[in-house]
Amino acid sequence: MDRQSLATFVSPYKCRPWMTSTGAAAPSGGGKGLKGIVAGGITGGIEICITYPTEYVKTQLQLDEKGANKRYNGIADCVKKTVQQRGFFGLYRGLSVLLYGSIPKSAARFGAFEYLRGHAVDANGQLSTAGKLLCGLGAGVCEAVLAVTPMETIKVKFINDQRSANPKFKGFAHGVGQIVKAEGISGVYKGLTPTILKQGSNQAIRFFVLESLKDLYKGDDHNKPVPKLLVGAFGAVAGAASVFGNTPLDVVKTRMQGLEASKYKNTADCAMKILKNEGVGAFYKGTVPRLGRVCLDVAITFMIYDSFMDLFNTVWK
Image 1 (cartoon, helix red, strand yellow):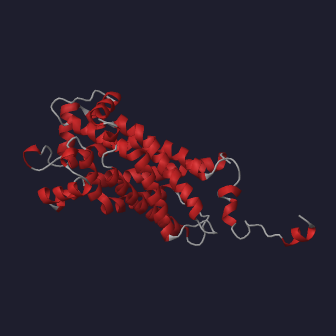
Image 2 (image 1 turned 90 degrees about the vertical axis):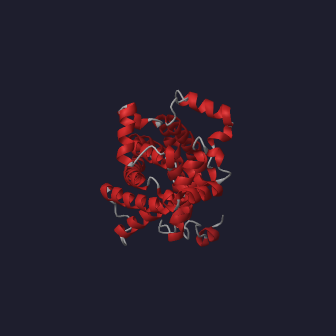
Image 3 (image 1 turned 90 degrees about the horizontal axis):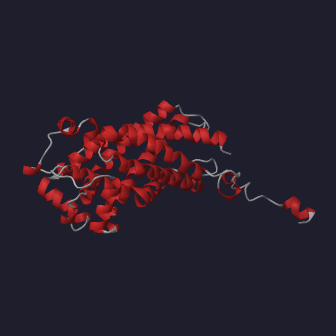
């Protein structure tokens, strides 16, 4: 390139300054997508160990049908009977399944969100309203396909198995082997459609609310740090919003993944049978325990995740 050309040359990054921090022009040492995967995986493992009992109770109540087969009269009764019959650690039945799945689930969610965010931010590094929703939606769909559907299907079948007089699953490996033997690989992908709908809407709502509250707190100073306790509070609000927004999808998903899923032709048939046989209220079964679990879950998750991302951004260049 001659001197005249050099004098008139305009760097493509001058009109697209965000490319200096994301994409091909980003500094070497790993992009935010990879950091999100690692930080998300660690976050998922820690979070599920704290919140699993509420997930267990929620699933039991959602599987509980009206009539002669009804077993529990609410949250306290479910906890009481479980502890009486199986001890305190009965509330952790199926934890190994969720633990094995929570790490890749959280890694997929945050890795996808950071990757999509890196391609959706404006020149100031900010996401638009649509960008927040779409990045959250993409993160939810990614985790649903890669981790949540098989993990949730196995978890629900394990908890459902415990409800029988003679449980047949003797552990994680044995249980998964029995499911695959009886139903094939597709047996661990039951309820894929409602899971995609649930996770996609879940994360779209959560990330939108969280990012919006962060932006509101920061005001015109986009670099203003948000205190971790406040991040937790924002996460709790985001979690509550997602619960009220998609609990019906969660109930349908749970029924589609239970051991009696064969009685439903598809997602729509499951929803129609629940509506016909149990009424509209059945779509909000387990809302209270789910609300408690999700608010705590999302608050803890975003606090831990933000802390690890701050650490990685300091030591991982």
